[in-house]
Image (tube, rainbow, N blue to C red):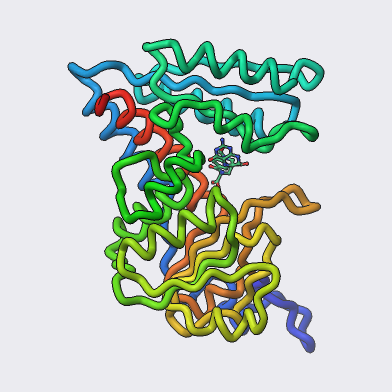
Length: 304
Ligand SMILES: Nc1nc2c(c(=O)[nH]1)N[C@@H](CN(C=O)c1ccc(C(=O)N[C@@H](CCC(=O)O)C(=O)O)cc1)CN2
């Protein structure tokens, strides 16, 4: 964007504001700030800690996925900031067998000081994720991924660990005064980690819920009916403004690294032209995932 141009006749530099409206993002779309909200959670967790058992999380990282290494380090750093304890178990790709992971989980299941066990996903190829996760005791499943905990959520009970990403989405919605009750909501994605628990949480909050996925027909029309649209499709910038009902709230759960190294989500930036609120990537749902992990670990430690 240029504010000046060279005059055609004189060659002088003269002001030119003709494009200035494009300089700032002048849409009215509100940005739902997960980074800010997550920092409030960390502070509150710090304050609540005094006089109680120090919550302890054990993180298992199998293999050498570089993004997973970053996420695990972030978790350890944030736990430390809140005065929580964490232990990490790094298992090389070569050593990552089902037997080795079972042994590590069994040892942590028995350790009374460990309140929560987290196996960082994705696991190296060849390992059966479900088998390995199901080795964790349900009361130590602070990711909320186990069939036991997802099943509890399906009954409408909210008293066992809830998957951190959808839990963080609900916290963000309520923090911005957005009540899903009675709203038409569409969740794109049906994974056990995000799509299904997200839909169950919205249902528990009295929303009308549609789950869309890769085989859904007329996806755009379905999304155009959503007051709240949750994009968890795993496809970079797939959701464009054409999907969005005017003034809808758009929650972007995706996180992808583009060729230019910048991060993007499942939604295109042009949704801001139509939506009334959007979670940014980065700084939206991602930080809330870690905040909710802290909350789940604290609850596992304090509600024994
Ligand atoms: N056992 C688990 N594995 C995975 C989970 C999970 O919840 N439990 N979720 C993702 C990865 N993840 C946490 O593990 C995670 C990803 C991203 C963020 C985040 O805060 N992202 C930042 C951007 C970070 C960057 O610069 O790369 C943001 O969105 O602002 C937090 C947690 C898969 N595996």
